[in-house]
Amino acid sequence: MSKKTKKYIFVLNCGSSSLKFAIIDILKKEKIFSGTVEFLHSKKSQITFKDCTNEENKVIFLENLTYKKSIEVIFQKSLEKIKCLQSILGIGHRIVHGGEKLHQSTIIDKKIIEQIRSSIPFAPLHNPFGIIGFQEISSIFPHLKHKQVAVFDTAFHHTIPSESYLYAIPYELYKKYGIRRYGAHGISYQYVSKKFSKIVKKDLKYLNIIVCHLGNGGSIAAIANGKSVDTSMGLTPLEGLMMGTRSGDIDPSIIFYLYENLKMNIGQIREILTKKSGILGITQINNDMRYVEDNYHKDTNANRAMKMYCHRLSKYIASYFTMMNDHLDAIIFTGGIGENSVMVRKMTMEKLKLFNVQCDEEKNANTKFGKCEMISSKNSIPVWVIPTNEEIIIAEETFRLLEIEQT
Ligand code: ADP
Image (cartoon, rainbow, N blue to C red; front, top):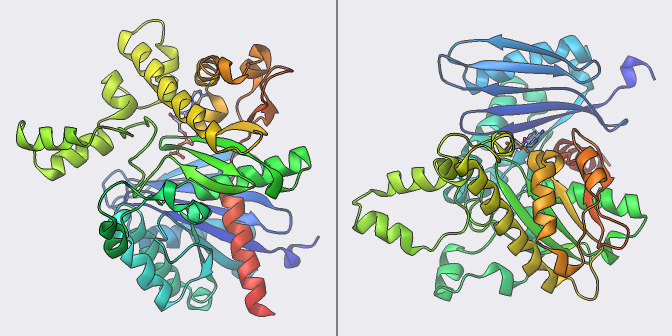
């Protein structure tokens, strides 16, 4: 294929202090170039570029990077790789929260921006920056203004029935203010379930699976007949599993206690539950699962963190068995921890013996760093590790919508 016929989709994921991007060759469905901008608006701003064709990494340091400047630099660098700006067909934005109205990917226009804005209270660290990403692209590259698509992390969960998405609080809080479970990591769940359907050659609509997306943020989804029927994240990504720095499920009275007895203000309580809890809170030193694994036998706090992590995860998995109709096709691990932590998978599976989940220790030990494998023993409920690829889904959705637009 000549260079002229190449077609790329540019994928952007904008957060409060970082921005990730990827360029996808949409015909080959391959990531060719990617990168991360970290420490935006600070003296330590830096951009890491990864050439996916030769795995070469390059880091550049630029003080006080703004969104605008970052996007300019990223495009400049990307053009060295893809040569021609016209080969970028469109931009796919990962938008964390679509609220109740936005439950499928959509081309971005004024009305969509307003709807994304209305969900800012539920995703204050993400949604505002998705909007900024759209605006900066529109002003720097006006020809791409109408070629931008929003892909929502909440969308996959719009099939969750009301008994799963409602909280047992006054119903009018849902009706008036939209306080309900929305979930997250939907783009990852979409990729993993599609991939599993291809692996087992079975139509998604006949598949019942439990998928554990375990990264710095972590969640789990019950997917019955190919559709999400429950998930552990709630109104915001704070609920559910124990995470890197987030508490996951707690008794809400802890908040009253911190407020009334320890005289903390809401900002301090939010900081504790979102940034100082989870693995970091228990180890008191590190939020990284690699640290927990490495120190499991040496350090009481790391040992405790690992046990808590697997205890909570296995409880969720066990509860999701109740939503699998007449059979369960597989439990699937994905995300940085799910794909790599041999110990988390082994300890979690051990707790599920009663449910006929058995780990093949050798296969489990050999499955990491991007390998896609079944890690259960012969007579077990199948357990798989499937590396996620959210960018491919965002690029496919963007391409699909822009193609439709052109026809
Ligand atoms: P994010 O949610 O930021 O996308 P990732 O999916 O990259 O996060 O997952 C990050 C987590 O994956 C960290 O806790 C990290 O320790 C864990 N992780 C990455 N590699 C390994 C590994 N080899 N063994 C155990 N855990 C790992």
